[in-house]
Length: 151
Image (cartoon, helix red, strand yellow):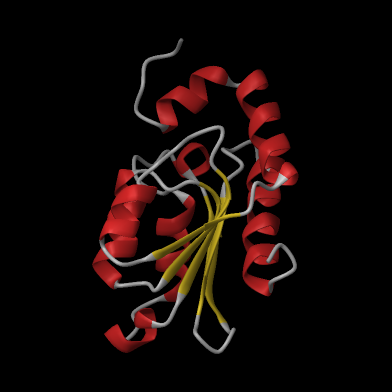
């Protein structure tokens, strides 16, 4: 699944975020027929945003879509989604969430499953390495991003 166009797009977005000095998390919303509807990366640092996580960015970049477009869609994300991004996936009724890694942060995976959304965790070493580097270099920014005090 790491060769899927959706995962590749999400990982490329995470790498772009890293190059910009932001939180290296990327996401891509992919239709049931494999078309990338929208992709984006965490832009909280770059845009001084309280809410612009990768999944929200991907949804924003997809633009307004009919409800049916989400029902068969997959949200690819390089990191387990936080409560806000989990809620967005539930609200729009995406069918599946494919997660690059969940060792750095374990988000709302159980809630997604409870709501009938398939969850796949890839345990991607590339995703893990991006997060490890970012947290080592910018721990304050990481804890701010997940709504916790700097440790």
